[in-house]
Length: 420
Ligand code: STR
Image (cartoon, rainbow, N blue to C red; front, top):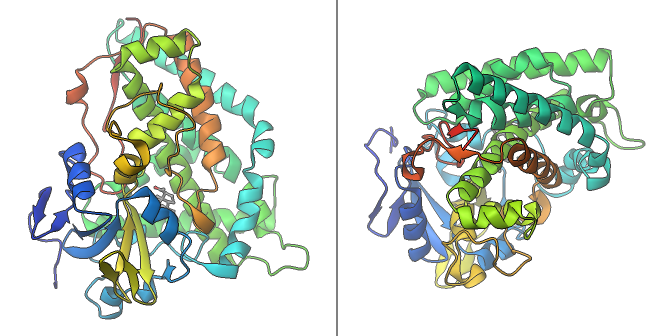
């Protein structure tokens, strides 16, 4: 397995192993194959073997199991040098010391301030700013459409992509002038078409950028979360520069990429299910339900990499051996028939609520930005349809292209017509 990802990849089932397609050519087919492969499935990630969890109940149990850890050094393939920085997905795991990569009491120390800054109550304070960003970007959509004489505009690049970046940028104190640079770099980071040397180079550039921001805030703190992360806890151990940088980049990457998917996938689901859109626009079904059903049915995170077994873990007839890697396949979990019923593959906002999905994870690492993403989508979606009630897709649903990204569920572009 010297150059494991060199072999041509296709979404296939090979000897009981589901090969995850880096080009995402058939996400629904792949999801079904994973589900059929059992609660614990063997997968191939660009030549690297791992287990994945495909069932809600098993994920609930394993995500609170202390025998599974985030520490890359616990991975046998990494210890033996069989996985190296040449593997295109290593950046999803080797992301620096932060709340994303550490467990136990150190994890609490790294995470507390961030989760406290993102409670629903604290988020009410920034709601007016999110509403303002939304209105500005709706203006930009209208302008773009006028320029095209009423023709198609890209809902992604003009609206769904810049909005989360502005929100997380405001929270963390990243200057607006840097947003295009960051969006471009993260797009290249996630894309499997980016050569690995380029991905490693851009990650190094991002580290330089974030370290400069942290030093700037250390010298002159403001009221942003980056400054709050730098300041010592009363009586507690302050975060190191590396830890602040790690948290900052995790927040920016997570806060922006996942929310793009949530907004776009919700709009897509509604436009391709007009009878359900009607019910929402008539006020019969709340926007919150649209958001929760989208999180389940077309979740922004396809697979989450990775945790490692510090001991053998028995799951049914299978054993995750010490040192093996475990992925959580949130897409398959959202389509779990045992959890969501035989119609799990249908988008249906009339299904009994609450929709018990797990799109934000579970246990100590549960998404600290969950409430923020719900607030963002809860503002963006109704505002979009209020401004453009005749909104429709400019292309057939099956022509919408997914990005060649293995871990996130995002589209290349979403051409729409603003006025029916
Ligand atoms: C991207 C690269 C980086 O510099 C830091 C991180 C840490 C947080 C990660 C992020 C990554 C990728 C997307 C993640 C995010 C946490 C939540 C988000 C995995 C590796 C999700 O997609 C759920």
